Image (cartoon, rainbow, N blue to C red; front, side, top):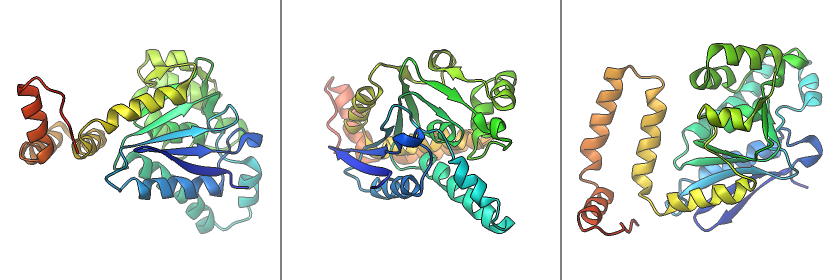
Length: 255
């Protein structure tokens, strides 16, 4: 039985991490499904991706039995295995459509990395978030230190990574890391996905790209990137539809 699957509801693809007996631990099936969802999202009819789980926990990160087995691999083989995970994180960040994580229970280790790679996070009130690596004597991967230090103060990141202290959904929401708290995160994520489906797909993709580049660019470089994006966007069909609808006080009908 597969430990992950893709569902489609209208214009939304739903990644389901279906590994409840191991609290949503990473699996080869999940890797395959994420890559397949990213490939399918290139289709213009797809407007958003929701990353969800079954069993009450989003993702507990790497399976420690698998990690122990990898200790027998060569350095290059171990590097290749970690790179596969890093490619998933890059793929989520660079996806052509927005990605919403719907989190029940919590996210730990690389599961937290995957959640933070999404554009928005909707979490259950009781969800907790843990950088649990140090408990197993290993270090963060999948871009976790990069993501956390961009989003949180150094002292809080140190507490999470060096002591593996869990952080509540409420605290992360107060800090702006979590978009919303809801007792039904999946339904909330679908409502957001429907909002994306009503909007200008190409423009949304361009904005997502600008947000991503802003983390790496200097202010001057980002100003240039925004200028180049704007001079192209203003003559695009989506802009013509949006501007006309705004001036006519109508709701835009994007293709």
